[in-house]
Length: 160
Image (cartoon, rainbow, N blue to C red; front, side, top):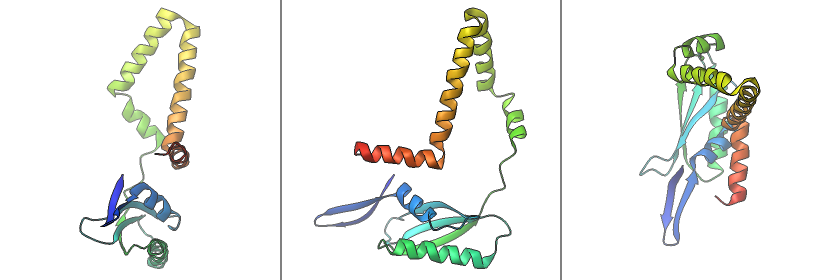
């Protein structure tokens, strides 16, 4: 998403929210995270939301905040930073799998797999399983931060 920043007689300037967030993440220390970078309407400055895990120290937070502000001010923005406590860790793999057992999509996929196995045989079933796993891992990679950077490079090369 592009955020409107400034306008004059020559035109307007918009900035990429994802690009600013990625840039700010370079200056965020490891236990912390940059959750949001936005330009509130009618204001000249960026609003940056950083999150911290429970029990984090104030000195580390202050140093991270100062480095993010300094980095974004180099780009010409005035910056306001807000801190929020990060939500509890997501449940473990076993709990997530247990939660999916009754999900309709999982039951539909299991029914389709059994139907394919009986109607087409073992070899087409294994090929379908292989291709499904390949698409799953590719989509999981592209949804990760490293995959997102690769997609941004492709978009840049395509001129988008």
